Image (cartoon, rainbow, N blue to C red):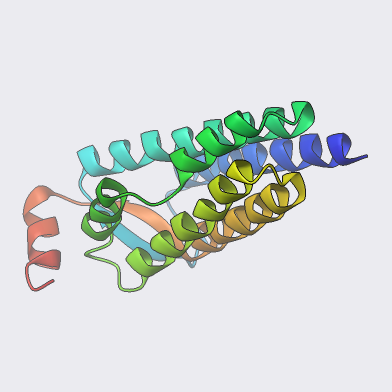
Amino acid sequence: MKFLFLIIAAISVQNSFAQMDHNMMSSPISSDTRKPLPLTAMMAEHQKQNMRGHLEAIRDLTEAFISKNFKQIEDAGKRLGTSPEMNMMCDHMGRGAPGFTEMALRMHSEADKITDAGQKKNLKAAMVATNRTLQHCTACHAVYKQEIISEVDWKKATESK
């Protein structure tokens, strides 16, 4: 039963991201009321690569839950968790969108609990932490959307921050 739940959850998350990308590209006029996250084109692509990396970590967690591979749980949790580099990147990306950095850092902080659970070989705690991490992911995606702006406009939008 847990296996089926995890598979359904993983597919749902993947489909949600695919639908978001499709919706953002298919309609220039949209009822999308999310707040803009102003980024240069290069920053936006970098962020998308990171999001794909997060999805790969979730995929690896799902696989690790099935096989009860605690080392894999720990490793995938580390890829989602906090680090000095991740903190700097979240701060940099969120400079033009009040509240974004704090939301992003809460997600990464929650993901640290996945690593802790893997180290303690506590499958249930790892699954709970993964669920809470995904809740932070979907909350952030429900609030913010990328807005591609020029380098000059990004500097103007973030110069006092």
